[in-house]
Image: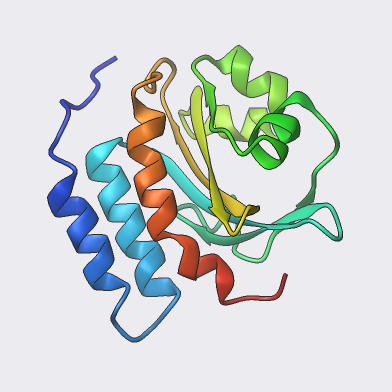
Length: 167
C-alpha cells in the first residue's frame, strides 16, 4: 500500500466551498468534491448516491466511472447491517478489505475489477435525515478510522447536491 501522506484540509474545503457558488450545479460541486477528496483521502472510484427513503433505493448522481457505474443507475437497498449503520444510525462505513467489500456490496466483483478492495461510505445528512452517501473506493487497506471524520466535513459541503433533485 502506498497511501498518500495526510494533507491540509483547509485549501480543499475552501475550494469545494468556492465551487459551490458557481453556475453549472450540481455537476460543478460534484467535480469539486471529487478533486478535493481525491487529494485528501484518495480514491480509484468515487460516486454520490441519492437515497430515496420512500422507495428504499439509491440513485447514482455522480461517478468517476460512468461506463461501469452510470449516472442515474438505481439499486434497491435491502435491510442489512450496512443500511442500519449508514442510513439509520447515520454513521460512516469503513471496509478495509475485499472481504469487507464483498460482505456488503452485491457488485463486489465489479468493484474488485476496478482495483478496489476498500471502501469508505460517508452519509450526507440534512435536518436529521440521510440524503445520500459519498462513496470512496481504493485498493485494499487504503482507508482507516481517521479518514471518516475528515470525509464527513466534505459530506456536509455536499448537501446542496442532494437537495437539488427529487426525494
